[in-house]
Image 1: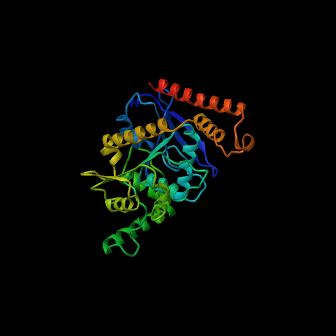
Image 2: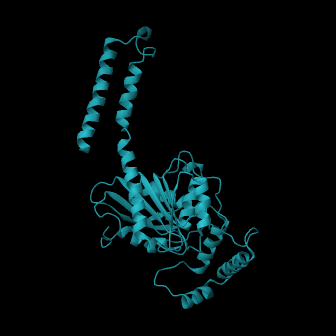
Image 3: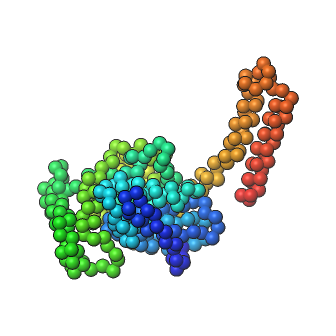
Length: 338
C-alpha cells in the first residue's frame, strides 16, 4: 500500500467527551472488506505504518487506523481508564466507519486486550462481530506481576512498576520531564499520568474463560519468542481457550512485532481479508433469501395458502414467478462475478 497517499483524518466523539482520531484510507474501487488496526499502550496509529506498506496496493479494502483515547491525536475523555471503555471505542469505530462491509480487526498488546474485552462483554444485537482477528502480543489477563503466584523476583519488579505508576499519577509534570529527558522519543506519547492510568487498567484486565463468542471467528495469535513485556506464555493461555486459533511464534521478535516483522503480519492480514471476501461472496443476497423463502412457503401443501391446503391457479403462477426470479438473480450474479 502506498502511504504517500494521505489518509483522511476523521474525528469520532464519544459520550464522555473523548475525541478519537480515525485515519481512513479508501480503495479506488468500492470496498469489499474493512481492516481496522488498534495499537497498544503508549503508542499511536503510526505503529501500523510498516505493516500497511506490505499490503497490496490495488486491493479493494478499506483501511482504518485510530489513536486510542489519550494517545496520539485522541483526547482522553472523562471516563475512568478501563478496558471496557476501549472496547466500546472499538465498537464505535466499527459501527460508524464499517457499516457496509465485513471487518477484520488487527490489534497489538493493549489493543488486543480491548478486542478480547469486547468479545467477553459482547451484546447479542448491538455489537459488531469481526469476520477475523489478528491478535499480536495478546493476553487474556494475569498481567500484574506483584500478585501472589509469580516468582519472588517478578513480584519485586511488579511492585516497582506499580509504585512508578503511582508517582506518575501524583506528579505528572515532573515525571514527564524526567521521561522525556532520559528516554527521548520523536513519536508522540501520552502524558505520564494518562499512561499510568492505562497501565493500571492493563493490570486489572482479565477475560480468561469468557471468550466463547470467538469460537466461530477465524483468529491468528502472534507472539515474539523474545517478548519480555507480554511473554509467550500469555499466547499459550489464549491458544488453550481458543482451540481453533492458529498460533505463530516469531523467533527473534520482541514486543515490537509490527515494526520488526511487518511482512509476516501483512501476509496474515491478507489471508483473513481473502477469507472474509470469500465468505461474503458465498453468502446469499437478501433478495435471494426472501424469494427462496416465499417459494418454499407457496409450495407447502399444508400451508395456510389455498383452500384445503391446495394452491390456486394464481398462487401457482406466483410461485413459478418467484422461482424464475430466483434463478435469474443467481445467473446474473454468476455473470457479474465472471
